[in-house]
Length: 352
Image (cartoon, rainbow, N blue to C red; front, side, top):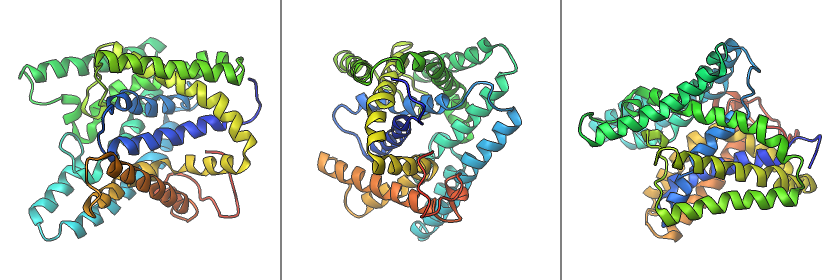
């Protein structure tokens, strides 16, 4: 399915991946492993998908990531700090604990900063990958794969009481997690350059059908064999080779479905296409701000473990987080909190 238009389906997949981040934080449920095994790899693989190899200089990449990821992280951290001051003012010890662990990051971080590691890890990994472009390609692969292998070794040593914790996750701001994340950024680049050209030659119906199989079949295996999920923030990558491979296959499946069938539908549905364009630009705000909404939902009574409470928490947080993101992007604060140019109400853009 060849097209000269922007692929709105992939923009929709970006929105979907952020929505799955919210769902993962809304609570656990039966079969949540089927979500956790691919939701964060999808987030990072998509980031690599848009990180064109050799497309930017190292200096430009660092400046770009500072503007689009680090500054929003710092701005939202200030907002979170104000919330913590208000909520925990009566308990100075707990207040200082949340502020210290929140700004420090790493294992034991404050729940108020539940998602902050995503953006910082992505920023550091992207800049590191750009740096490795000055070397042969295999060097970056060696670092990414070596990061996953080392992470697995740390897990074994921690469980054997040789180590006290996971070194990658224990580092401030989880800086060590940036190394294995490079692997998923590379996977995203390879999917864009090697697989997507083949996908675009298929009809939308065929590509969508294949994509659905690539999503469903691996997840059936996960459920049948109890294959462990990935919890990248903790340095846990499940079974060696098998768990990462499943997350990659599922991601390819989602890309095939969204880049073809969903893309075709969006190009026919103008209003939906415009909405997706706006929502895709709210990533930093939604990722960093949705945790505060979830905590409020828990605090006002929607803290049960039933599917009903989980559905309410998820749906309310999803709508509010994206709505706030869209509104923020129409104000002068867009660059500060979302890392994107201001989008005026009269200007309806379909570009992320």
